[in-house]
Amino acid sequence: MAALITAGEMIYSLPYHLARYFRPTVREVFEFSNTDLGDIFVPYGIVAMLAYFPGGVLADRFPPRKLMAFALVSTGLGGFYFMTLPEFLGTSILFGYWGLTTVLPFWCAMIRATRIWGGQTEQGRGFGFLDGGRGLLAAVAASVGVLLLGTWIGADPTNATAEERAAAFRLLVLYYSVLTMAAGIVVWKWIPDPLPTEARAARYARSNVKAVLGMRSVWMQATIVVCAYCGYKALDNYSVYAYDVLGMNEISAARYTAVFGYIRPVAAIGAGFLGDRFGIARVIAILFGSMAASWSVLAVLDASPELLLVVHANLLISIFGVYALRGLYFALLEEARVPDSLTGTAVGLISLVGYTPDIFLYPIVGRLLDATPGVGGHQHAFLLLSGIAVAGLLVTIGLHRRIARPSSADSAGGRAQA
Image 1 (cartoon, one colour):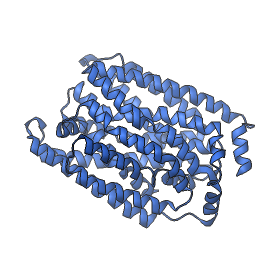
Image 2: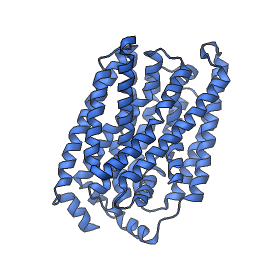
Image 3: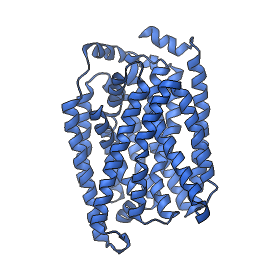
């Protein structure tokens, strides 16, 4: 599990950590607008979307250790090109490359390995530990990154020259590139190959794509992931919110976002235990409801001094809910009775649909922020997120009712085929 955690977070550190924790710095170094930052993720999202389903087939065919190690090294190598600070086109192509390396050989292989680890009774805990551990590692790595950035450009970044800021950013990219490739070595050494019985089940799964496509519960899980992932992607704008609305400088905004990252292990692991105790779908519904409420509050509040405590509290609630959801939604595979032998293919389909926010959310939010600079643009973004969370709540309630029916057609059919 430690190896899975290390790999699962470091694989996304280059495309996501820099944009999430150091977004104001990225804007300054590349001279990108919020719209530009959103648009460079479009190639990533398109390539990733095309890679999820074939990645599921690969995960059911090859050992996770080999796929994941290859993905980590390939992703880390891309960081050396990023250090050249390419123009918009070059950056977009790089993100498309990362969409391939972080998904096709990696994502479904990691989920398959985690489901094997969790067994039949501890899926919530298994995925909770995975995402909680990833969150802790992300927060620690980001804290070190903030220290590196502050050391290079000083406590007051307004005094830094463009050359100093660019040099500091290159140092950050090198730091994350080395961590990513080191994670590949950890995976190669510590993640075991599947047992013979698991390999035989995987060979059978390759002929059952049609079975997965016909499972309504899988499509509902995919919709839940869409709604949850929109919330997760929105966290990348929290550092911009701190910078634009709360009045922090880029170092303080990065530190603020990094500190929130320490919530992730508590939220994900705690949600995993609650999910195993009270039901995964039931806990997910509660989380969507709390997130919808907190984003609705943020959509109408400004950042005046008398409201700051309420603003911070609702930011905290939304962050907790997002991180808790990430620790739970793939645990629905067991609760919805998806056969173990179809794990890779099911995860590929769920991810194909569920991670489409990689394509559309950044551009939409970037345009909202640029159209109404300041607090207004962020309020519009929070209103959008609240509506998405309500949609997630409704679909989760529908899936919970379907799971509660023991004669559910797709689950029964899946078990018969297994």
